[in-house]
Picture 1 (cartoon, one colour):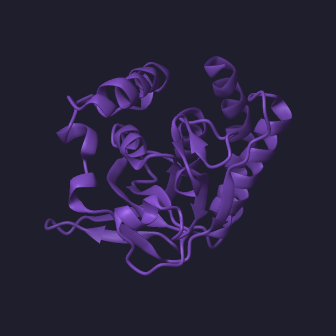
Picture 2 (spheres, rainbow, N blue to C red):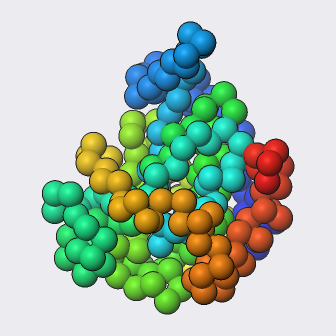
Picture 3 (tube, rainbow, N blue to C red):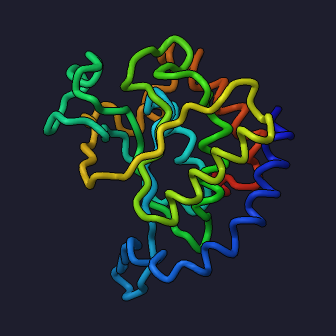
Length: 221
């Protein structure tokens, strides 16, 4: 399954690479970060939900070109929700991560590849034993280019038969409302690696992820 998915993504990346160059507004959402040396670094942002954000954060932190990953909540109607409130499933939010990355080192296409392969996008409002709308598979797109790419990948993956069931991933516009989760959720796996959830749920995912994406990992990993 993993090899099949990778083959599909390599083929699709070739099809979509031209679209990135043809979109004159694709850079409008990029932010500029200036370091103390005066160097200006271009960054982009992606926002994904793949179930529990502890797992999602741990995976995307490993990728070369990813500068920052923040766990939080998006897509709901409650202002500044707490973790306890989100867990009730009544706020409308999804547990997700906001990823700031260097597009010269890693592309949105590559982030999408990791997104699709590191969770089950065919289970509605569920990842393993985590059940509820807060655990839904979702891509919050920040611009039209991200929307087109996400929808194209979803359609082509369904057509390819890469998954045995239809993909139910929600693709919706980012509404500029991302609420960072409480401090104890940030860097959760790195700080709590010996906890049962980390040992029995996150660690196996990390081991599989590192084998499949070993060519995309930061050198320290």
